Image 1: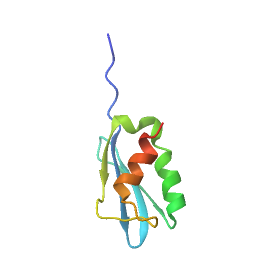
Image 2 (image 1 turned 180 degrees about the vertical axis):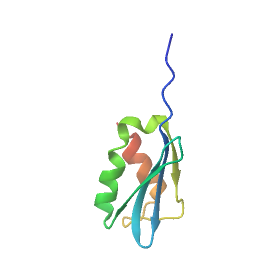
Image 3 (image 1 turned 30 degrees about the horizontal axis):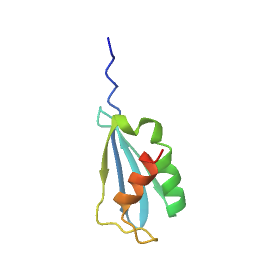
Length: 83
């Protein structure tokens, strides 16, 4: 019998008050929100979710352009799903 992967909740990535935000929302609707001043720190935080990202829903603020001109959506996909 194959066990179903446990639902780990939602990972939300967005910008708020000029800070980069990584917010994890558990299946029980508890939120853990971290803010970062630099893109580098933001990217490092996103990469820490690689091991469990397949078990989470991903929510991104789609209209954000990063400093290199790419969208947050594209950058997050490259960071999280690049093997």
